[in-house]
Image 1 (cartoon, rainbow, N blue to C red):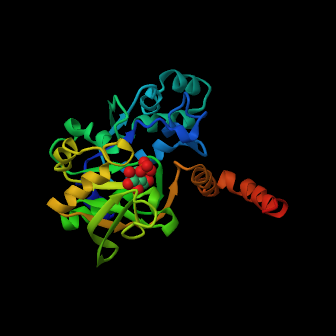
Image 2 (cartoon, protein in one colour):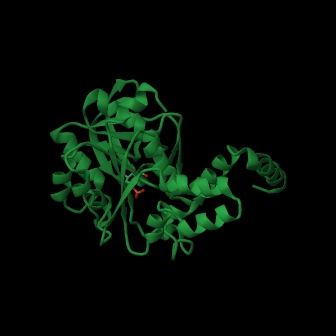
Image 3 (cartoon, rainbow, N blue to C red):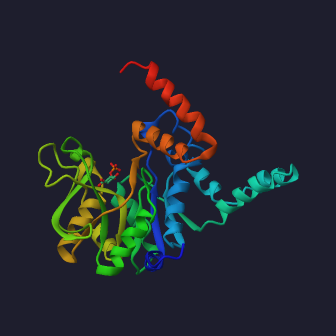
Length: 300
Ligand code: G1P
């Protein structure tokens, strides 16, 4: 893509994708398979996230992973034996598709040795990110949008030179499941945040603007995270670090354009599968036919 938006996003060259979680909500599937490798149709969720970063001009992806997750590295490597066998069988197009995954982007993999929280996972990338602004993309949040989700935030970062996080309105009944931000509407979807809190108790949320897993942050977040005490769930929370950043340097929210799927939730994951399958000409007809049949025959 060559739109001016994408060029702006290119100034963000690196991103972090935390992928060290245990994936307990998807057991037993995630006993031996990383949650990030579960497919949406036929492609691992993590590949969509990496493709979003690449479409926004990001050149280096830091994946924070954990024990038993080496298949993530294998997926973005050259599958030499598989490719050779496929080429020998004349399946050139399929082999080329596999090679394209390995050529997508430079990937650096870092172990988060203990599950100390999202803030700690981002901190693990400090030495690779260095002294420049960077993106963070959470694998549970799939954003289907014309302009890549992280690219939208990078554009806002370029305009305002301030940390920016993705926001989306959620029903009041769901605010306790998210980081929640409140602040002043600056127009064009941009919010100047004056308050951000991780998973507020029911009835205490300062707004219904939920933090969705896309962030563009300055390197000054690292010393903040280094000094961050544990928060909700006994973990070092990224949102708590953002609350400090808001006070020291300011923090923006951006109501991104596009459809978000929560692939970390079972119904959200199934919805994502249906939505992405419906976009595929080879699957759409058969799936629609089945869905019509289900609607006709299933009782509520
Ligand atoms: C994380 C963040 C939370 C954010 C959410 C978005 O929570 O801590 O602030 O709202 O992602 O998906 P998690 O869903 O990992 O518990």
